[in-house]
Image (cartoon, rainbow, N blue to C red; front, side, top):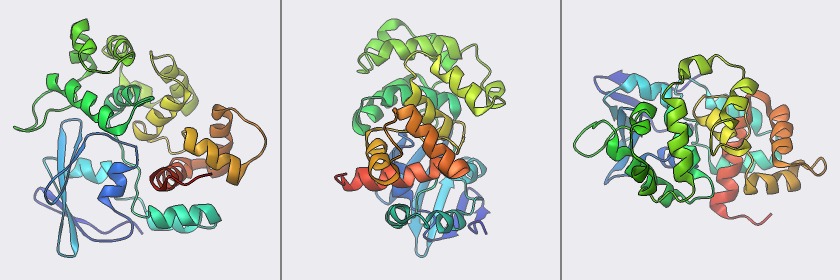
Length: 280
């Protein structure tokens, strides 16, 4: 059964449980617009803002759009059942126990495209700094935060705006992609098969196979995708080895093995090995 929650006015409320841990969800590499506060976290997706905090035995998600954050945190999916099924794999049992509160968030596709172009060969603090500079031209949500700007707004920015982001070689990719996306109907792209969508994403400036796989998973909720980075490549070699493969081949192999749970498996494994800096 899915997690029991109730929406009361501007709040989602549910009891603390093993299927939701805000810090694990936010810090496992699937999103960048989150901020630690005195008593919890602020999270932004599109024009939507949520403040997550604990109140006694309850978790509270207070938001200008509670229904969006029910969807964003995928609260209607039974992660308990998923974890039970996946724990049959010994290495996954360890990873799940470590990151048992992780859930795959459902980000805004256009925003996620830009954010993961920024993310390549980059560290989290620098990624967040660049993204917040981009958001200076976004629509204000409140006195503290702006929404991530639309591709149309970004496409109107001068070349100097992108050069001043501190994004290095990625600045031209952001500028070029903005000009393409301003005339793109993302809702129509949602209707494509995962392969067709992947092919389109790879056609965008600065999007390679790994970034495309991340965008598919975190922006388009294609849970059959299995992004492969250095950590996952090492995990493959030690625990799933079926001969020498390129990273796209490893991704295809692991997607075939875990099917519609691939993206969830990837997050448990990535989170476990990367955070513990486990030597493989």
